[in-house]
Amino acid sequence: MTSKKLLRCALGSILGGCTALSLTAIVLPSFLSSTGLHEELLIRSEIGGYTVYCVLAFAVGGWLIAWVGIPKRGALILGGIGLLCGVVLALVVYPGEMDRLLPMAVAAAAYGTVGGLLLGHILKKTDEVDAGN
Image 1: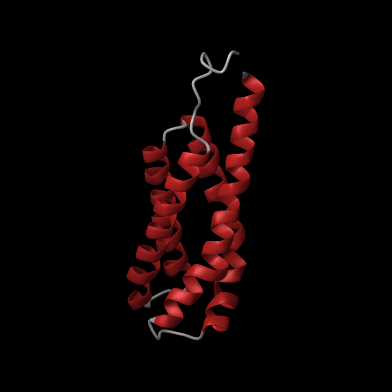
Image 2 (image 1 turned 135 degrees about the horizontal axis):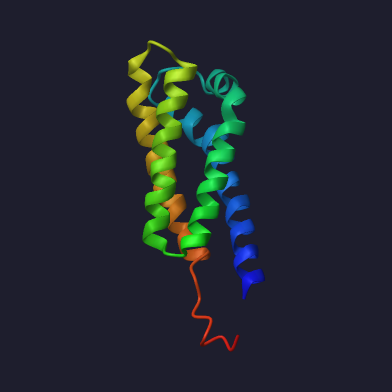
């Protein structure tokens, strides 16, 4: 029973980290380039140095989702972490340019919410009594 929970938490951490990697490598640069603020490759290179911090934050979020095991709370957890990462990235990468703050925060929060809902459904708790454990 305990090993299943630990495996679920480890998988949550890995999947959460992969969510952040795709957020910083594909989603945010594509979204910002579609708004016409910068070129996609330039945005990717500017955000690239902060990817590891987002990956660590989302990995902790994935672990929390697996620990809680409720899909709706998973959406809240990763949505909040996505919002926080989007705001921090906008403030650190583009200091003083407030026109990038709202698009980055909205895109990261929306992506985190959807990703958290998916991770919550993948990692939801099963009824261990019915499983025969």
